[in-house]
Image (cartoon, rainbow, N blue to C red; front, side, top):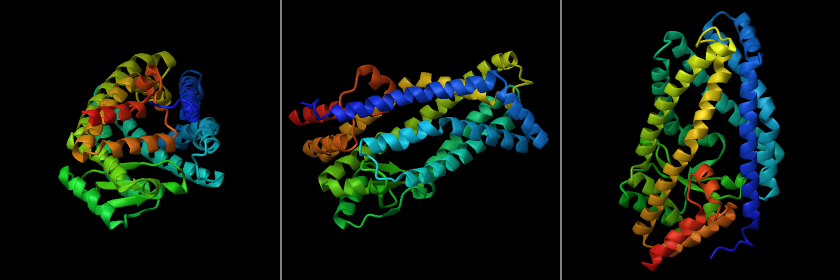
Length: 371
């Protein structure tokens, strides 16, 4: 039975994070609405076009100004969410300087990624009034696959030190489990999560030759080999059940649907706010607003699919390890260490949880053990 007394900090932490998520949504939608309808976007467009008549350059200038303004508007909330709250609940090991350095890295990295997407978006908008959304959806899917492939070897080392796991017994057990699951992996690596957080985590990351097993050092220090095996069995369950490919297919279908609906809505609304056409740079906030609304509508559907996959991976982990006790103790530790709300409200679970609550995962393991 879950102790609600011990869950009080976790519930408070979860409640604050959920409120901040709502505040972030309101700020983002309000910012995009004001930019799109009250004139600022057109002022930035005019400035960008005065800087250069070249559409690639003017798009870059517009994006840079737009991005700087948005970052300035959201900085305080980002710091409160990413640093202050984590410090308040004793989950962060970072100094303010360390957090700010990571914040700048994330800002630059996300800035580069979205810069590529925005440049390609306006390239397709300039080339085709009717089929731009098809080409953009195709590019989005391919770009996502490339990012998934390079993330473990290019992006992750920008934030964490990554090294080979030295524990030969653990490495042998993990690689043996991977082979048993039919998953080809390129090594077992340790991530220095403890340099930034007390939370524990593990993952099967990458695609093809970059696929590797990643274990947080916070996991390696505090968990037994059997418990770590249960964590990895869950991650390998995603591979065995074909979840990675299914998520890519679902993402592709969602991308095509999203870009089609966004294109339809954008064409109808662009003239209402005085845009010169669909390739007008001033339309970026309106497009972003439409995409954001679509993402919110899709959130419970996407999270529901993710929770279903996570339950299947949990079941697979229990079946292949035949060690429900290790699974239960591992989940209990993770819940406490990561300050997870083990039994959130049903509405909260449907809209915000991409994993089943830990209480339900433990209950499933206990039922498996009884059987």
